[in-house]
Image (tube, rainbow, N blue to C red; front, side, top):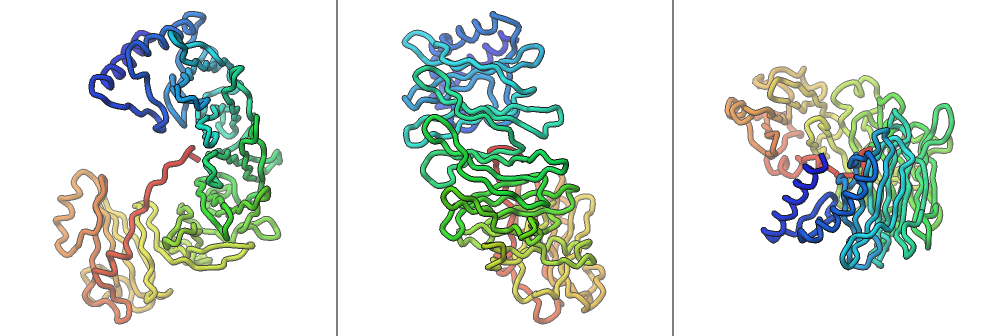
Length: 450
């Protein structure tokens, strides 16, 4: 196994050297040694570790996913090597090697306290160019609780900067000073645990708690975290599912100095002002630079149980209340598209989605005008059809529908539309309007998958 590891690593390095590549790995911070001699020096030290006992290389589950990672921890312009190993009984070890004149020397060694090596991250320490080594450990077999130990590399070797337990973590430079903050979602110890968001920042020789805010009582599982500005302050937008996964809420938390204020929580600790039943995350929907929160357009149970649950009103919040409507959309989360709702439709247009073997069709029609029928019926009340073709033969299936117009194409789907010629007056759309209204949902890459 060790031989195959060395052969693979050597082959990759030689290929990069011969082709002139500056090979980036993982999150783009890591660079394998540039020359075979440098590789041999490091491999010699790795072999010493492996020969000292029954050890195997360990690969992190998230974050930077290599068993040997090269990163400049102390900001001196030279990469250190961080290598992860696992004992047969599961215990994790890691070593930090620093490049000497003719060798790699061990400058740090630790053994993990958790059951699994959850993730490895390298938060920026600021303008000095240094980076911390943040290691996440799985704390239980159910993967509901994790621990993180954060180290810095000083003159005497590794320095422990923080030990904390958490449910979710993300790393972000919140205030723009080039130093990353660590943001932890934590559970309290109650029988029905509630969540809070805690921000830690580097101060001298440790990461210290900057601020904390309780999240709404409905939030149980975090699905997304975004960062932006609100009233001149830094803000976190934390989207979550409730306990039984039947709806979503958002906590908007503004950071004002050493204080964190939840802008969407009510006096009873609830956050239903941001309630919706579809998996859609906070985003700048109108392009004004402020992140907006999707909220349900209907609290009427009769409509929530239909495809109209996908109609969302995007709002901005401050002081616990909505202060601005940024727009209205119809979101097809399953097919990753949405439509900016035209003002002329108001609340008179409804939607119905039909899923077929190789196509999904969404019909928008006038409420109460006529019972929706087949799209070939000229007396129907439809004002717009959106089609999504998927599958290996999607191009062939599209050819069967000559009246459709293609609007977007991705690697897996073809998006089309058609405008019925006999749409009700006052609700008709043009091709130019559809081009502006129709959007694809962009994939967001997280520091950690929530």
